[in-house]
Length: 122
Image (cartoon, rainbow, N blue to C red; front, side, top):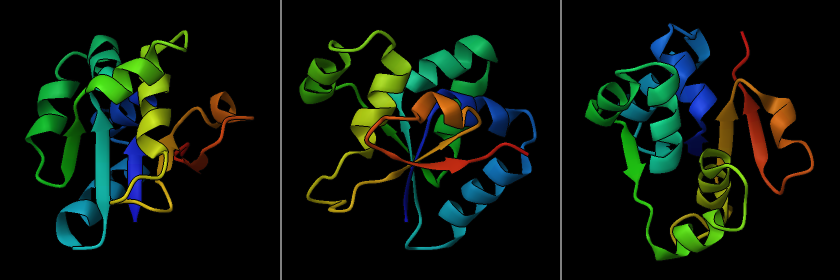
């Protein structure tokens, strides 16, 4: 299971969202669960709730995704960096042939986008 946390999911995790906490626990304890934090979304989450970036980056079950050249080119085509980097991270790759699911507390934002969504709204 491959899941990309958007900035709303990251912020929710720091505010005690039970569903986000369960995802983090599963990624830490189960070998076939992977959580990704795109760096652009991590920055936005930290702006919304200072300390979020340090906290999430320190967790073993979360992989922070760098803004490499392919991601930067994809992000440059969108208005918001956080959503664009999350969407890019959810696309299929050789490591994730089926892509990843975007975990969010703002599912309406993703309507019409080419991603699968996991609603973390309590």
